[in-house]
Structures are given as C-alpha cells and as structure tokens.
Length: 203
Image 1 (cartoon, rainbow, N blue to C red):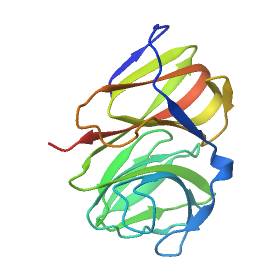
Image 2: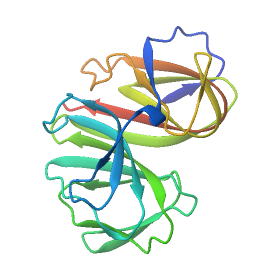
Image 3: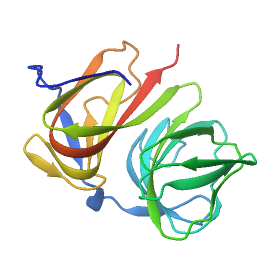
C-alpha cells in the first residue's frame, strides 16, 4: 500500500480507538448473516460513501447485492474462504484480499465453520478501496497517503498505550478520502497481524 517505516521519529496525527466489543451487530441486507460496522461515512441510514465492517459467515450462501459499490474482502478464519463471483470460484486464504463489484453475483461456498471476514466498501466514484495485511514484529510507524484505519487481527498489538483486541480499530483523524493525498501516520508496537485500510481519492 505504501511505506512502512520502522523506529521512525515521526509525530502521530490524532486518531480514535474503536473497540470491536462496543459495536452492535446488524443483519445483512439479505438477512443471511450479521455484520459489525466499525466505521462508516456519512453516519445515518443513507448509502455510505465508505464502510468498514467485520462480518460473520456461518453458512454457504449468497451475499447481499450492493450495486454501485466497490468491495474488498479479507477472510480472517484460519481456513480462509471460498467465494463464487459471477460463476468463477476464488479460494481466498486467510489475510489475503479479493476485490469485486457490489452488483456481482457473489456467494460463499463450502462453509463448514463460522468465521469472520473484514470488508471495505466504497461507493463508486468516491475513490478506490485499498486493503492489505501487515505482520508486526516490534515498533512500526505506518505512513500512508489516504490511510483511513488500522484494524487489529491477531497477536499482541499496542497503540498509544492501549492493547488492541481482535477487531479493535485505530481510526485516523479526519478519516475520509483525502484529496490532497497527504500521508497519515499511525504508530504501533508489538507482534501480530493488522489490516491497513485506505481509500484513494478519485481523480
């Protein structure tokens, strides 16, 4: 996604910690699963420009159709997730990412155990979603143009003196597609896996 600098003496922009355990679960649009929305903009019931969430996939079946939305999905279960997207099968390993259009006919396949996946959805025309995993082994300063959030996925990860549990999210100040493309920084410590979440502003 961009530069990750170790042991850099760079001031960190103000950011907010969102605890996964404090967020309510909501039903999918098709009623076949649940999602915990970590962050969205704008707030309210309208279609979000950007939405970051963790879903629980407990059975094989179709995803909700979301026309006009560009999606990226990262399986968090050890066995990954198999998806059928417009008739083609994709075996997506844990912490890998697959992107697809919200209007694509998409379904989970051969699900035997419930698991989570991380989802980034961006309304088409707002910008391009970016999602990738990063393994930490000590102090890191993440220095990213368009960085929106960092999500803790596993291990012992710390930010600003707080230990991050599964799904806990550091939301960067002013998190939104950044027309200026300025770098946004988050300083982490510990060992584990996090997801880097970004949106590149449309030209």
